Amino acid sequence: MSVAGLKKQFYKASQMVSEKVGGAEGTKLDEDFRDLERKVDVTSKAVVDVISKTSEYLQPNPASRAKLSMLNTMSKIRGQVKSPGYPQAEGLLGECMAKYGRELGEDTNFGGALIDAGESMKRLAEVKDSLDIDVKQNFIDPLQGLCDKDLREIQHHLKKLEGRRLDYDYKKKRQGKIPDEEVRQALEKFHESKEVAETSMYNLLETDIEQVSQLSSLVESQLQYHKQAVQILEELSDKLKDRMSEAQSRPRREYTPKPKPVFDYGDADQSNGGFTPSFAPPARSSASPFHSGRMSSRKSRLLSEQPCCKALYDFEPENEGELGFHEGDIITLTSQIDENWYEGMLHGQTGFFPLNYVEVMVPLPH
Image 1: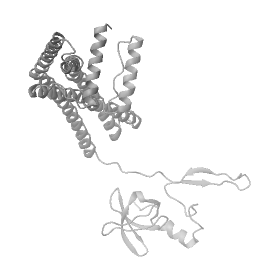
Image 2: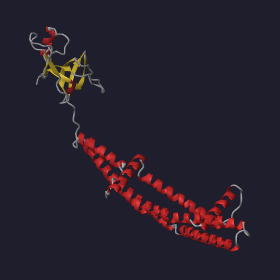
Image 3: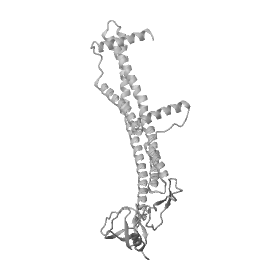
Image 4: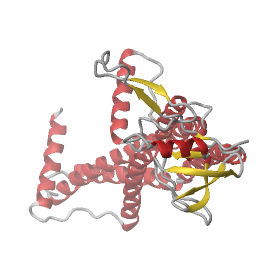
C-alpha cells in the first residue's frame, strides 16, 4: 500500500475513534438516502431469510438436508453428474405400504389397498420432487442471484461511501493543517460515492417487480403441485371406495372350525410318554377322551337312541328363542331348522343354536 493509502487509512481510523469514543459528529446523510438504505437493508434480510425458510419448506428434515448437502459436495468432488435427491416423506411412506402390501398379498383386501396407496404415495413423492426443482430454478436461484450480485454490490458502495465520509470529516475538522485542495477532493469523492450508492439502491427498489414475478413463480409451482396431488389422491380414494363396495357385495365366508384332534396313547406297554394325534370322527363315541370319566351304561344307551350333539364352544344367546350352553355340554337334538341352525334341549330348556358350535354325536333321523 502506498504512503497516501496508509495516510487515508489512518485518517479514517482516527475519525471513527473520535465518533465512537469521543462522541464527535460526522457528516449526516439526508433523510431520503437513509430511507433508501433502510429499505435495502430490510430487502436484504428478507431475501436471505425467505431463501432459508423456503428450503426448509421444501426439505423439512434438517438431518436429511445436511446429509444431502454432504452427498452433493462429494458428487461434485468425484465429478458425478447426477447427485442423490432428497428423500421425500411421501416416498418413504409409499415404500413402507407397498412392502407390507406385497407380504400380505394382493389378493387380500388390506394387502391390495396398501399396494394401491403405496403406489399413489410414490407418485406424490415424484410430484414433490418436481416442485423442488421448479421452486429452486424459478424462485430460490433468482433470489440468490439478487443476494450475491445486486445486494452485495450495494453493500460495497455503502462501505466505500462510509470510508470516504470518514476521510472527508477528518480532513474537514483539520482544515488549515490539511491543504484546502485535499479537503475539496475528499468532499468530491464523498459526493461521488453517495451518488453511486444512492443510484444503485434506487434502481434495486424500483425494479422490485422482478421479486414479485419470482414470488408468483413460487405460488404457481405450489398450485401445480397441489392440483396434481389432488388428482392422485382422488384416484386413490376412488380405488379404495371400489374395494370397499366390492368387499361388501361379496357374501361373507363363515369360519368353519377344524375338527379337534384326539390323542391316541396306544398300548401302555409300547408307550414312551408321547402321543399320536388323530382327528375326531364326525360322530363321537361315549368314550371320548375329552370326558373326565366314562359315561354310565344307561346314558350310553340313551345317547345311542336319542339324537344329540356335544358343544365345542360356549354359546351365549343374543336373541329370544336361542339356547345357551357351555363347552362340553351334551344337547338333545329335536330338529334341524336349516343348514346353519339346530333346535335342541338342555336342562329342560329348548331353543335354537348354530350348527358350527357343536359336534353331532347321534344324528337326527332322515
